[in-house]
Image: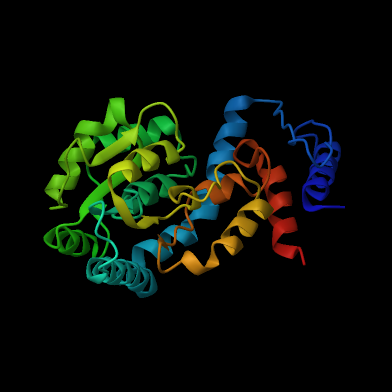
Length: 289
């Protein structure tokens, strides 16, 4: 029995024994449908509290550990070395050079806002919460980010901030925040926020028409042009393996144990599960061979 079927069977058992939710185990190719019953408000609060509890250690690590700072510096150092290598490469004489990077948890630090929310018992960072948080324009610079970006700018290389912040609601706050942190090239040409589709490939293709992209940087696999959007956990691992040689040369990923598409990939409907269902999935994944 493959992992998806095992999870579906286990969650069915949770529903039968605990009565917290009801759904049918689905074939391997079908998503598991989860329907909460009882008091929706109580279920939502319990889910928020459980997610907050799960995220606290990851947020503590990002907020306090020397190792996280070192990994930030390491990522920027590798990226700058690749920029210098590209500038010295006489064969790259066509399009102007550029780097493409995500904003949040790639150069912008939102962990204070997330930690404050988790400390209150809410680990469910909804789209509306993110939009309102971004609009306050209080994101900090990650360790080494401003210095790295300034060095790239000093070398005459274009910088594109490709983020899934919602452009219609968050552009002005994002530009202002970037400028206050002394991030260069923070203007409408170089800040490409989400308009219609969260798939960044559309924006990447637009950049690649006019620029020779040296490196892509992000904290989420979906920040990279590797066709990983919406894939399962197993498919994501396979795609990463296929691109192994490009990590540290063409792609830079920063660690983010707090949130990201990796969470959605744990199981179908993971964020909408009851705490009991989510505990079952977590244990199965931790114990799998």
